[in-house]
Length: 392
Image 1: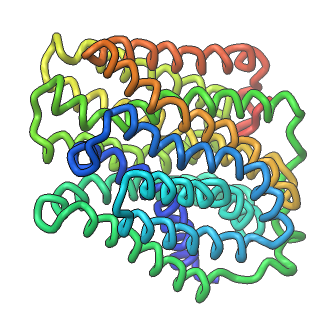
Image 2: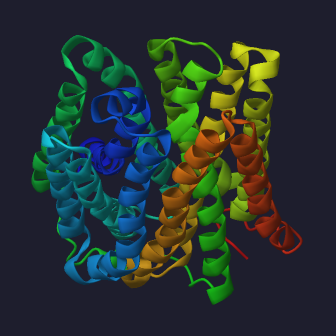
């Protein structure tokens, strides 16, 4: 198996699974204009996709254990292509919501299937980097969307940008069918470590819920916030999403190595929560201190809320036996995607009700501090010598 094509499949699978969320964020103003909807309704597009992902993850995770990692990955890419194509063609907001529901399915299976691929085909010691590269696919897709979508929307209309994302998902599907090896015989070679205790999975699920809720609020509304509260142009506002994406790509790779070699999962997740809260505080202060604040806020979000998945997924890969990797990944993704589903519409409703973003960003910051509180009890039990992504 060649590592470069294998890594490319992992990256594209993860990017395609969240292309729709990038589209809803970057194209929010275009969608509001075309379909005459509110900010809150744009948030419901994210909710539709994320809650389907949350509901399907506990089902599709175990299903990926049964059908195998290769078939699960191919299925994820196929559904991504179909969902994005449906978004491109949707003539009404109602049908756009239905298409968004379809894109949620791929969020429910992308991580379980690709985590299982790593468990099967990548030995311990190399998993931190490859997991970081895999998870960076989400942020690579975000950066790609932040660059591509505003430009194509201005030149050809917003549907052309979504169509380009659908085409990339189709290319990933073809590549996966060509290069991903079969599952048979791989499991015995690279089995993971001992399993989590039940409380550890529950803690990781709760942390994911909180990071998902806060992160999706920022990700979905930062472009609109930059336009409405900070006076930036649509193109510059979209660049804030690109910054989060580019930083997130780098951060996910770095966090994989840092977690596996130095800090361990507990301390890494605590640091991530602190960085996320700092980014939220900058957004609260943004209208008072100037438009420049959007850039450090975007960088901090890229380093934290956009990157925690590497640590969480590496913990699952390292600590769960390969035959249960899909099931455990599905449980953690349930929490994360449930958070994604509620964060955006709640922030949108607060802005519609109050006329500004202060309350919404303040609550978002408190949510990140709640994630820190989830991890604090575990820090006393972390053993420095047990580097790697172990949740104790």
